Image 1 (spheres, rainbow, N blue to C red):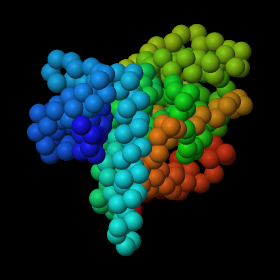
Image 2: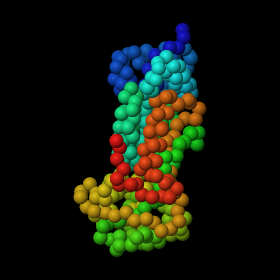
Image 3: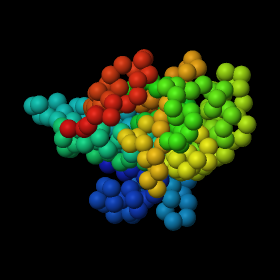
Image 4: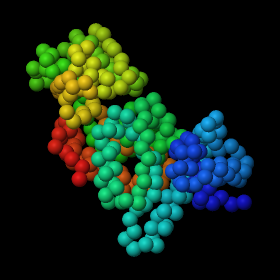
Length: 315
């Protein structure tokens, strides 16, 4: 028995969605077809490629991750070969984008709108992830490309830097520090510090204070960036953040302000990460270019650490 491209596509869909039912819906085939393809691949290798879980859930084994990486390479080469058959044929194909959950609402819809307008045959499945999962999803093949801050990603990935950010202070609109053009970490350390409850995030924020030799008097963790913003707006404390959504109003309508931090601090990068061992498909390559273009327009001078331009709009 030989492996077929269809079997590889079915297996990669199962790896991406982690569920046979969702994979079958995405490919418009029956669930038994996905299951049969996995069985045939495992019979071919004589080894387990997937771990099957209750409720049709599946995950790649360590060997399966190697198989999936090679399968992606093969399918990318096939797509490139098929593209030669058409004159001026536009890139097509599907892939899974994993995006850090705080960044996803801000940039992903705008980038995908641009992509869809130029390349309607490209399909992108978006998975929102936290710092504790996005690296793992990329490493096990459930995500093809990750858009995130440069935190918690595997050392084996290749990256494309999209922009660099300076941290900013989030303050209640009527806070005394809000009257200042910039604030220091020493001043912020005197206030209750509200952080998001993700290890990579709160550890990074505390490290910024440590770099300046100060320590917050009190720290509180919240479950999300929006809850963090609302807690700040309602005067429960201050925050240090990189995300810059449009508008300075919390979910419940309370105002808050952002102020630059006067201390010299390292910039944080927003980047795209992908498996350096796998060839990028044509669809993934044009997505990367669209993402670079979008961030270049929103953030015209990455090294300067300017805030996002409020007037930036997707076409």
